[in-house]
Image (tube, rainbow, N blue to C red; front, side, top):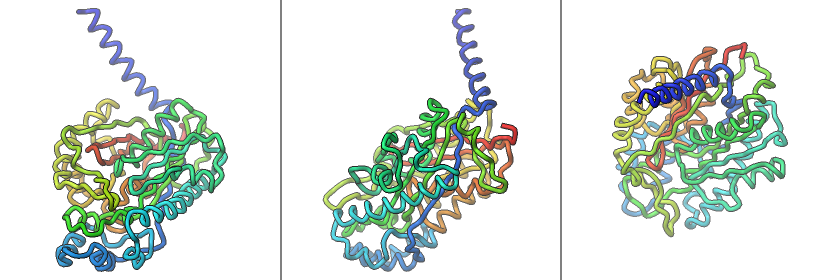
Amino acid sequence: MGQAVTHASLADAASSESVADDRRMGRGMRIASVRGVLPEHRYAQDDITGAFAAVIGAGVDESVLRRLHRNSGVEARHLALPLERYRDLRGFGDSNDAFIEEGVRLGARAVTEALKDAGLLPDDVDLIMSTTVTGLAVPSLDARVAAQIGLRPDVIRVPTVGLGCVAGAAGIARVNDYLRGHPHGVAVLMSVELCSLTLQRDDASIANLIASGLFGDGAAAVVAVGADRARDLQDRVGGPARPEVVGSRSRLYPDSERTMGWDVGAGGLKIVLDSNVPDLVRTYVGGDVGAFLADHSLTGADVEWYASHPGGPKVLEALQESLGVERALLQLSWDSLSRIGNLSSASVLHVLAETLEQDLRPGSYGLMLAMGPGFCSELVLLRIPEAAE
């Protein structure tokens, strides 16, 4: 028994020492740049409500639709297409064709601009991970973007589909997994979400009406480099912070498969959205965050900034309550929701980009978090390196 306890103690000590070593030596990847992009078609929420009421069609009480849209916390959104074009889309085929055309354009723009911000070229990229949940493309969007912007023929592609809103945070975590094994490497995460193209006609369900007022369109790209490559980065005076990833954690919640997702039918992607999402956040997220931070010898008091997915007003309120923080720490998420709506996986990356533009203290810790279909969450612990690191 004594010997077993000794081995366990040594293992715990080694684990804690490894975490501390990673923190000191910066073995996690560095985020070199984050760029969010939006379609050019921007509309006030009231204008979208009126247009979508006509698209959804018979059985919709427009007064109910307007009430739900007003309660979404969204003031304006960017759409993949001009507003008048939505009534002309003839089913899933037309919508998906538009998804591919506009998705490639936005994705290529996001990646190109993020690489430029990082001082890198398409030829430098070793891996590109793409994520989307709002359309289907084979070849995947990353393959199409790779050909358009000139990524190397041997670039590693990792297309992911189905993670939904959690994928922005989960994508950073998985890119970090790759770069820990490739410390000289360069990786790109590309998120493209054109939620407006999933709008269901002839569906007067509350879930569809809420979704039609909450979700917007946009894309984002993250450029990350391995720990050894990070030493070559030139820190820019006054530029966005370039945090390191300290660690991440995935969490899948029991009996929650029908909480969020899609039902796929002849009309395309039909939203599944249960009203108990805020309850799941209150039940689990605070404890998950506490345990995750404890494994890094931290507490909630050590987290100075957050980059949270803006799921919706009730979700943000539940998250604030679960984390035990003031609204100010989640204000950028509230602002993003109001200004552009919920962009599914791209949203948390837009919030991260804005967060890194803030005056973040060197040595400070931040937490990136998102929830999505599964029902699940992803936590990513970030740290702003000291000047000497």
